[in-house]
Image 1: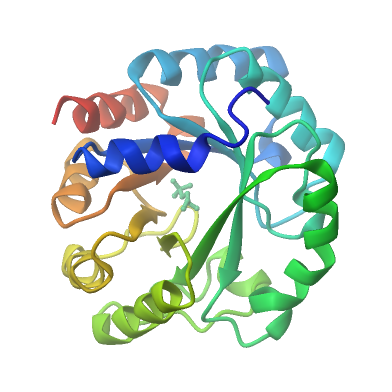
Image 2 (image 1 turned 90 degrees about the horizontal axis):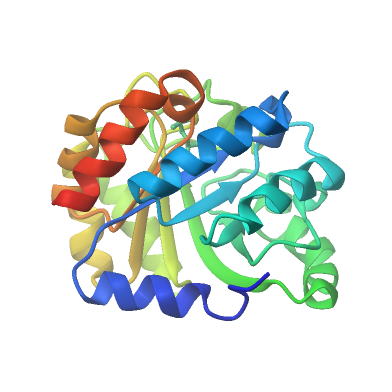
Length: 250
Ligand code: 1GP
């Protein structure tokens, strides 16, 4: 919990200096071996990942999340919850992406879950990172199905811009363009570019379907401030390390 209260300011300072960041996503539901996870996380931290997100769309339970956070606590980078529901909270995390799934059809994912979780978050003392979360392109992603989202088509970046601007005007500190974990295609570059131009100094996170350094750099060059990768860390750690090194060398 040593990062609590300093996570946003640390990210913002780096972004304002023009640095690009990488977050590693761990889904507690997929963790079977904590020792192995610890080894994996040491490697991504050595490569330069800036924070670890912990969460997933399905079946997370506070105990499982807390075990993952315990491992992160030994590594010197912040742990940031990325919850699919109030069940994804944890007592020991540094911060939480307080994500409103803006293009959901169900108010529960826009504000309902937040009302349930807010008093608990207050009691736990987590640092809150207000985030407008926008699903792009992929109807069959778990996050689209579970979150009852109406994903924005790849060829309609103007709609993405409108959502992202609305998030900014509502005071959200982050806009997160999400293609969905394991998506066949990440969010297209021109989509990222248009959104970043519109929201300017609001921090832009992009994730989903990023599997190699070339794609990651293209998305960074289009204007993303932070890249998130999950699947590639689980399935091809070497490639994940290449992605992180490429972003950090840039
Ligand atoms: C984070 O859900 C993504 O935004 C992670 O996606 O698992 O495809 O890297 P991947």
